[in-house]
Every structure is written in C-alpha cells, then in structure tokens.
Amino acid sequence: MAGKGRRDGAPRRGSSDRKPPRPDSRAQGQSKPRSQPQRQPRAVEAAGDVRQGAFVEVARVIDAPASAIFRMINDPAKREWAPERLYRVMSALPPRFARLAFPDGSQVAIAIVRQGNTRSSVSIEHGMLPAGADTEALRRRWTDALYALSDALDSDWG
Image 1 (spheres, rainbow, N blue to C red):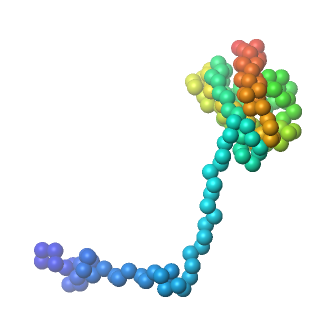
Image 2 (image 1 turned 30 degrees about the vertical axis):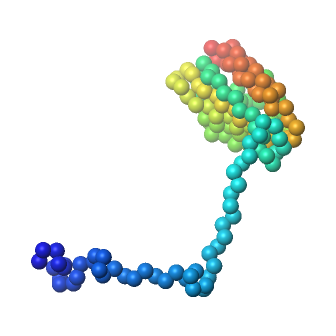
Image 3 (image 1 turned 180 degrees about the horizontal axis):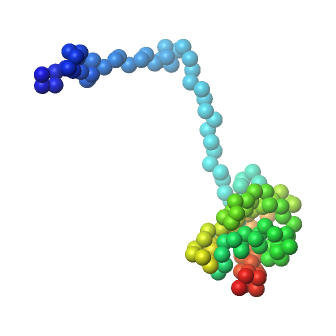
C-alpha cells in the first residue's frame, strides 16, 4: 500500500481522478461578462483646471510636537500663519491629518508625522485648484506659511 489509495480503499485524489473543468458559459454564448469601467489615471499638470487635478505640494520639518501643530491648524484663533484664514476643517484625524476647504472650492490636505517627541514633518497638498491658478506663486505662499507656522509655534509652544 505504498501510496496507491486511502485506507478506506477509495482512490486517492490526484491528477487522474480530478473533476473535469466546468464548461465556460461565455464560450457557449449563454451570458456575457459584465463590463467594468476602466479607471483613468489622474492627470497632473503644473497648471490646469480642476478636472485635470492640478495641485501644489510642499513639506517641512518643524521643531514642535504634532499636537501643537494640529492645534494651530484647527483653532480659528491661531490661524495667522495660514495664507488664507477663512478655511473650514472638513475632516480631521487629530493630531495626524486635516482636510481643509477654501472659499474658492479648492481643498488642502495636511499630514503631520511625528519624528520623536518634539519634532514633526508637515506635508501640505493644495488640490482642486481653479483653472489658471498660478501654482508657483501658490507653492511660495505655502512654503512661507510653513515658515510662519514654525515661527508661531516657537513663540506659542517654545
């Protein structure tokens, strides 16, 4: 009985006793497969309209804890660092993430990553920009805003 069958006498399942494959119903024309819509990759341009997904991204390491940075973003009384103070916090995951909505319809995603107890990396992505937005000027504004945030945190936290 060196591997010829099972103890109960039934043949062991192997390549010789496999079930035949099920007939392909599509080959017989019984049903057609559902067509899945093809996802188009998001086009990113240096400047463009909202449909093209234009955005600006900046990042900086700030010497402050993530909770202090999040308070500066979330508290309306502490928004003097921002290039536009009239934003609405759409969603937040304190102290790691905030999504902001601006009056022009654009949105900003701010990610805060702890790098120890007193240091954090802040990434800002300003997306859904209106057609004809000057992305270089906007990139400079957000870079200056991150420096202003750092200075405000030095005076507020430090």
